[in-house]
Image (cartoon, rainbow, N blue to C red):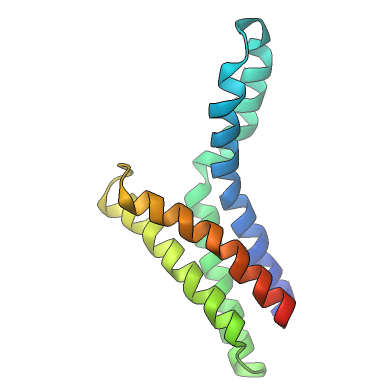
Length: 133
């Protein structure tokens, strides 16, 4: 059960990260396609749209899975130091996202840079946790 919940966290996190990936691909490649390839642009944006629309929900799902995962592991096994590091990183990540959404109302700023940096640090925290478990 603990492993299943851990993978639920990873999948939710990856779905949330696709928001950034799709936006970058759109900005640097898709939007620069010539007008004769408008169909490709439209198709890409159809695929991209749900990931942008539901980005915050994927993040909230990840933190929910993290909470359940932590409780389950705490009650049945031992707490992994690398798991604690990954959990703290995710709590910071989601907190920054909530701050940007609720307080800053989506306006860009330092919070967004930090949110993105922590999101990439999260990759290493998860990888370290999986490798050391």
